[in-house]
Amino acid sequence: MNQIKERLAYLKGLAEGLNVGQSTPEGRVLAGMMEVMNEMARSLDRLTMMQDQLEEYIEAVDDDLGDLEEEFYGEDLEDDDFEYDEDLELDDDTAIEYLEMNCPNCGETVFVDEDVFKGDEIIEVLCPECQETVLVNDNSGEDDLAGELLD
Image (cartoon, rainbow, N blue to C red; front, side, top):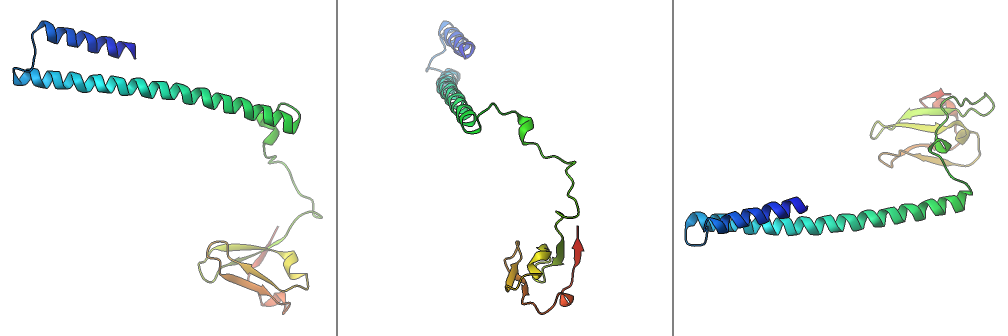
């Protein structure tokens, strides 16, 4: 930032040394350009100051968040603590089976837990895309439903 101010001061000195003033059209243009550049330098100075303040604030918030995480979780957390285990496999007892069907209104694929049909309650399944009723479990029989079970 100091370089810009120094170069602008140098240009002003050159203009004064060459007697560039308001008397000629070229002088008015050059004086106007230097005035605009001076305003830009002041604006850049303010932006730099604000940026520095924001960086300090964000660092303080980050430190406070780190303290809260340490207090809440009781230990320093690593990024590896929250990774998804892709090798995790469910055995047959814990596997969930779903009925896959297309919404008649919007065509979106809707997955319905197979256990919905095993209960005695009447359950409506809504499409997550258009919020229309896809099916109603009224215990009239699973054979009437179109779809396939997924593992």
